[in-house]
Length: 106
Image 1 (cartoon, one colour):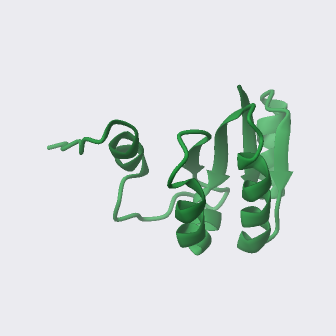
Image 2 (cartoon, one colour):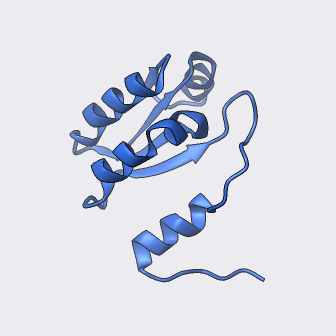
């Protein structure tokens, strides 16, 4: 399975240097959503890496797009500006969706 990256230019270049061949540099959340729609149609993509700031602006559309799909998995990463404060831990949410169980960390 392939990995795809949807992010700003600098992030995409970094992942390409690390060996990820499929990367899409986007300039807006709307462009990111269009690229994500294209990527999820590909059967050989198992993981999509996308920056948090892009997803935050299109979260509703992204959730609708991926709600009935097992693959690809979507992983949000910080962009070059750093992480943003979140109310929901994306890793816990990913596990909850995949396994159906909430993880409680104390």
